[in-house]
Image (tube, rainbow, N blue to C red; front, side, top):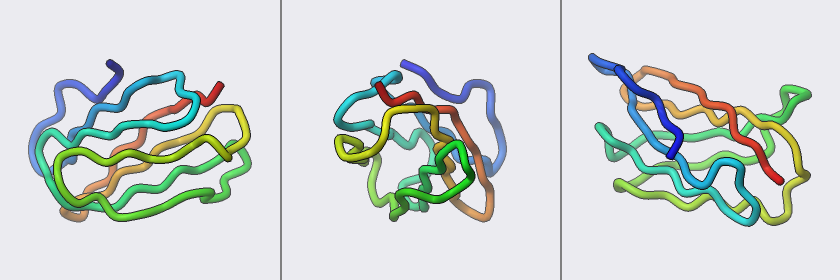
Length: 87
């Protein structure tokens, strides 16, 4: 699994798998159960966004172009980003 380690305070902690991904990405929130996410492409465009409710959220990626994306998670006025690869 790929995730954000050693984060403390109000910063949202999450894990994603698989990475690289094909049809979907599963996002697991470790500390918060509500928030928002955005998938941003290499050109800086937001290509997918939504709400995170609960511990686990599945993000569909089958119809997205292959490449590198930035997954941004916001919770409690804090923001964390992670690189996602779609194959």
